[in-house]
Length: 251
Image 1 (cartoon, helix red, strand yellow):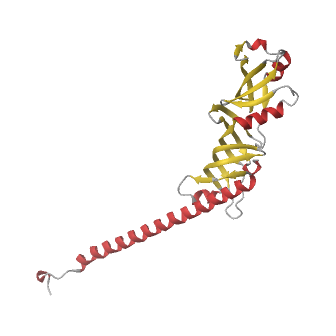
Image 2 (spheres, rainbow, N blue to C red; image 1 turned 180 degrees about the horizontal axis):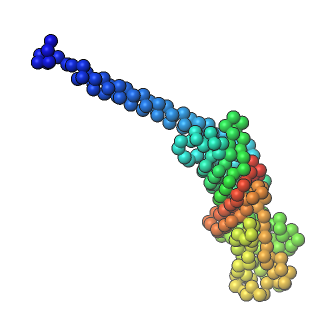
Image 3 (cartoon, rainbow, N blue to C red; image 1 turned 60 degrees about the horizontal axis):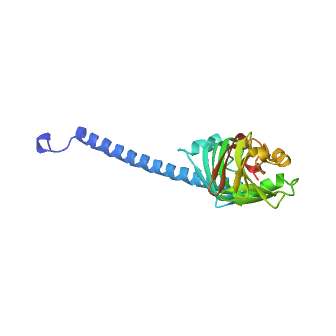
């Protein structure tokens, strides 16, 4: 059969074969890429669970969730360090101090996939809500030398009360803030029988004891300290931050 008869020549067949070959190669590459993504996500899930298990074994926490950012993740595992982890928990207890609505961001965390062992995190920033009642408990521990002073949670604040001569009661509103890695407590308002009185009228012994009162949050690992504190409806929102932090030493 001749060219004039319309039969395909070898030169006409070659582009078709090359086209089929490129298509087959493309399909293979797409399949391999898909498998790589699946494998990457599987390993992410395993590591997230491993980090969650490590934290739950070292701290009394409820409903811990872990989310790891970054793709591909396999390169991070090969390097032995996770770039960033976002953590959250419905509640967590440091020693016997309860926090709720806890969240944290951890960066540069060494992780051994085989043993699931955690190294010291490069940086940690975490926040949790300390209830007014829990803050009251911490204050009571610091003021055991003032037996005539009682503490009570009232309208989102902590109020210190003491009896005066004549059967009147002095109420002192305490205002928490962050200072030098601790919870500092300032004297806010003073009221006697519902009337505001100047802070200078605070009894000398009580004034000296409540001035520059400092409270440590127990259970924080070395390198992690209070950096910010905000009063919220449920109590105080405490933020801690630090570098080179051993997460397994929390609690």
